Amino acid sequence: MKTAWDNLQIIREKNRPTVRDYIPMIFRDFIELHGDRLYGDDAAILGGIGMAGDMPVTVLAQVKGRDLKENQASNFAMPHPEGYRKALRLAHQAEKFHRPVICFIDTPGAFCGVGAEERGQGEAIARNMMEFMELKTPVISIVLGEGGSGGALALGVCDELAMLENAIYSVISPRGAASILWKDASREKEAANILRITASDLVEFGVAETVIPEPVGGAHNDPQLMGKRISEYILATIPKYTKIPIAKLLENRYYKFRKIGVFTEQKGVNPL
Amino acid sequence: MLEDLFAKVKLRASYDKPADQKGKINIPENLMFKCPRCGKVEFMDAFLLGGKICPACGYHARLSAQERIEQVADNFTFKEYDKHMKSLNPIDFPGYAEKVAHLRRKTGLREAILTGECEIMGQPCALGVMDARFMMASMGSVVGEKVTRLFQRAEQEDLPVVLFTASGGARLQEGLISLMQMAKTSGAVGRHSRKGLLYVTVLTDPTTGGVTASFASLGDIIIAEPKVLVGFAGRRVIEGTIRQRLPEDFQSAEFAQQHGFVDMIVPRGELRRTLAQLIRLHTGKGGGPDENSVG
Image (cartoon, rainbow over all chains, first blue to last red; front, top):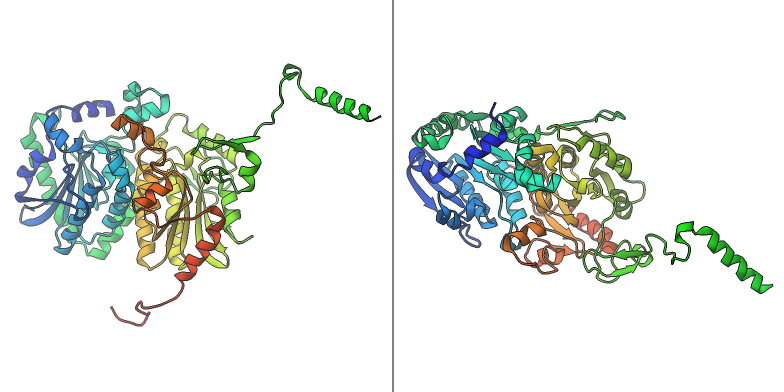
């Protein structure tokens, strides 16, 4: 059976397609928009408008590069606060024009640096979660590869979460977990396999709804086919949510997250 | 006669010392306090009498949830919510159950947060207090659920929420379930807010990670205690990224205020009065639409 560690090897594959590969396969007439109107434009998060079938949609995505140069330009898909604020601005714009929002998640996590702290990384992520929860238009999130902690969740408050078959979504990188647990980052493999981070784990927890199958061996073996499957998923899923009255949609979205948690309220019994 | 007295004391002193410490200078434990912010060593008495504040730099050290409630709430007004909620081990994380059981015995707490309702100088409010002694008050299912219910009940009962935050972030031992508590709590804050109710956050030492990136940053009014640590990423993580030492005041309450993320820094002694004043300022019904108005 395939383990989380095997998934990690596949999504770290050098030729794994990124959102820049998929956009032309999925959306027609795509136009990219820039800036948070507050501080700057963060290349780690891409935003724009395009047609999904006959429906205009807003696209928000974390951008991994395909080579070192692209990765340096997009800061290895680790967003700064201005990236999250750009996403929020465009999400509100989508709400205004009644466009569904499609988020593509693919990030090691929010950037950890001096500027990010000075400009309120924590506040930016928190605000996105709170406002996406009440965004009056359907939101669909798709994890393409790496769903890294709060930095991923800032684009992950949605009506439906889909995972590509080999994608992972984790509270902490397996490397980080290993160094905290055993003070030894090289025990990454062990950590990956106990953290429960695979697509099927997330469906089991009720966090993800759908797994999009990848071509044999991983998305890099046939990017066109992968793009086609993502496109079909989006086209089939949007109408499911545009049909629901907004008040009901928001209620469902809140309860999707509200119900997550594992605890006991039995008196006096030590459950552990 | 007088000499006899001294001899007796001397004799007593030598009895009290264990054999292996004869001749060593006997310094009682906990005589001194070393400040984690400024590094100065001060007498513990001076530190404790001031309400656990460093006499040298004014750093406000951590309080237990019980100590905090005693300082802030009016006597005998605190009624605890969800007292019996305890964590389970959702991803069968090795050693997690033992760690939690050990901390329960050691701290007398069931989890890293106490929630309930109380009065502050006669002003009723919902109150949450996180306690860093319990796994650095990391947020797992129980912390997430208790915070969510606190906002839900406050929403139903038209109460303002006062929340003392302290946390190392999401509880990695609960995997992705802990991460999702960030979305859940933020959603609950939003619903409470939409009803037009007040939420005051008090950032205490240390407020970091997934708690900074959720309910701690979403208060209508954000207060911080002086010199406490407030930030998203860990200091060492950032130092590792930029490969240089960060300035002393980086990620302090003062740093956060200077960059626009904290409304005010309030010393511990004035906190009760400030909170009561803020709640009072939000009880009037000015301007807004009344219940009979349409739209």
